[in-house]
Every structure is written in structure tokens, then in C-alpha cells.
Length: 161
Ligand SMILES: C[S@@+](CC[C@H](N)C(=O)[O-])C[C@H]1O[C@@H](n2cnc3c(N)ncnc32)[C@H](O)[C@@H]1O
Image (tube, rainbow, N blue to C red; front, top):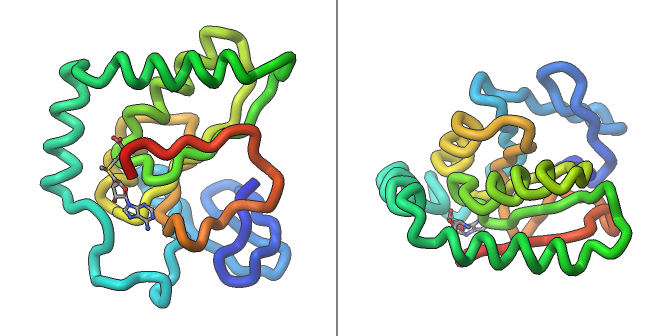
């Protein structure tokens, strides 16, 4: 479902690279994320939440205060699934991946096959997510220029972003 930020053509992950049909390629980092934010899509040197903001929110969320909200989102997706057993989900402004990861675990427990992509413009947020949670595609990109193929998704979540 990921498309090239340069030419919009479909991209495939081959080993540790995303390569598009137009031959643009992007390395997967040692943390497991990919940076698809082009320099002309940035309006500052370090866009999005800072490392301090990310750490602070991660510590807070891990205390469980927002667990009810996450459970509520997951239940809405369950209700809207219909007979789908295989879904694709995008989390826009995913931060350090708290909701993204809880949704992944929820779907696995329901035996729903899933591909989940988390996108955030903050490199620090995406690095934190990639270090903590595997089996999710973590991408640095902007919500205003999503590197996602048209009509490729079943659900989009966007939590407090
Ligand atoms: C309040 S945080 C919410 C993070 C996460 N969804 C959560 O609820 O824990 C907002 C997030 O949106 C990101 N963000 C801001 N502008 C963005 C943009 N244009 N594209 C993608 N992400 C953006 C920030 O970097 C930050 O991680």
C-alpha cells in the first residue's frame, strides 16, 4: 500500500530497502523505519514533536490513563469489520505508536490478518515506535503528502494529531 514520495508509483520492500517501479529507493534504518519525508515537504529542520515530547508522552501513556480511549477505537474497528478477515490500516500522526500497537495486538487476538502502517512527521516519534514495536511499518512522512496508494486502506485512525 506504500507509494513513492517522488513519483507516486507503487513501492515494494525488498530486504532493507523500499524500491518503487520508477527505481527510487529508500533505506530501512537500523531501527526498522523508513524516512519518506522529502526535504521540500519540511517546513522546519526537525518537524513534528521533539524527542522530549515523545518521551514524555510515552511515559504518560504507558501508565494506562488513555487505555479506555484505545480500547474504544479498537472496538469501533471491530464493529465496522463486517466479514473482513484481512485488513489494512493507516495511523496518521502515530507518535510513538501507542494506539497503533494496541490495535495490532487487538486484531491479532481476534485472528484478523492485518497490515498496519504508522506515519508521523517527527523522526524521533517514529524511531521510538520502531524501537518498541515490530511488525508494523513505521514511516516518517507528512499527513499533507501521504505516501500511500489510493484506495488501498480499510481503516484510517488519527489520534489527537
Ligand atoms: C499529540 S501527538 C499524538 C500522537 C499519537 N497519535 C498519540 O495520540 O499518542 C500529535 C502527533 O502528530 C504529529 N504530526 C504533526 N504534524 C504532522 C503532519 N503534518 N504529518 C504527520 N504527523 C504530524 C506530531 O509529530 C505528533 O507525533
